[in-house]
Length: 537
Image (cartoon, rainbow, N blue to C red; front, side):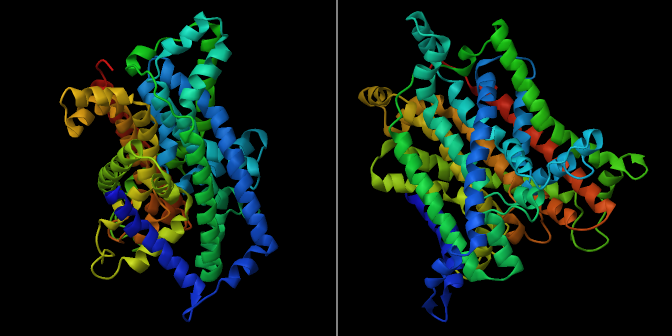
């Protein structure tokens, strides 16, 4: 636990605490009275209520739509499965500002639905909820599907032989086994939607506001650091309560599971019901994920004089306005380098943390578990400003160093590594480790021979999540990325903030490139995972 605790204390707790102190401590006096004053304002109460209920609604809707997809990817074998898995993951790595823009182009004024049927959903809560499902679909599919694919289907078949219906066998055998991963996925979706920023800002307009958008408005627009600090503390406490309830609930459900190699559990769909489920999942993916992505691709080629590659060619030339010090095409290499380093950091920190949580119990460890998830629910605006304030003096003067960006990105990647690996690690039968120890294996060799073969697939899934999150991280990166090495999401956001057809087209082109880079990376990961996931468990 020492290394993860030190990492979070230095790169998360310290920056956030510094921001809160600046907002609540004026002339050496703490302004605790501002809590009651701020939280009694009607507009703030409206923000708190909307943040809570839209996050709950988004989480429930995402689980309802994505759990069938998790089953299809875990249990069915079909042509193009790796490609489709990469496609559903692409939205998760997109900058949230691009998610909002994609749905604005789809359901907003002059969007595809408006042109075809006169239907507009912008400035409605439905646009926000659907965009959240689009963004978080992969979280459920990969988190739940990663464990589901390794559950021995013979346990459910045994229940069927003993007279249980298909629904009862799934409800009494499979669902309890999946409960930890379902809870982990729901937790991550809830935290992401509760702290939603760009999606709400673009699709909600002035009608809707979450804690995240309000913190940004109070910090950047009104320069009211006191109100921003109060809202940050409210967000911090709320996330802590959610994590504590989650930890207490999930611990009671975890049991040792019988696992098999993923290849042993998959088969072609059989029967009308399974084929109907398969077709329904394909249709939902096409409408919910492929269609918005297709709109982005189409806009990247649509110029004022027809379809062409003008926007892509413009990425190779220096920016005439001087806003970018390098050609925009260079942001691809910057993003990939940052993402690789951030993934390695997240795997080391998250792997150590997951191992500690597996082998230890008690209140201290449960608190540590909650600490690991806090970056998902705390404002990225706060973290980004905190980095600028705290990491600018010796011995941690990192403001001029490139490593600052991967460190910020790894903060968001670590929770995904932990949540993906922890259910599988805790499901490993402790008797296997004990048998290895009796036969003379050291703790390291027991982990290498027993745990690693079982968690290799989860480790690769975790690596894919960490890499994807790093590619698309925007909230903190926008404050700390150096002008001569911006990332893809930062460049896209800056282009969208500038008027003109060329800037918008270049933003669409960069977004399309980001989608392609993500898809290729995830396809390579799928091939690596398939090639190396073998052996008798």
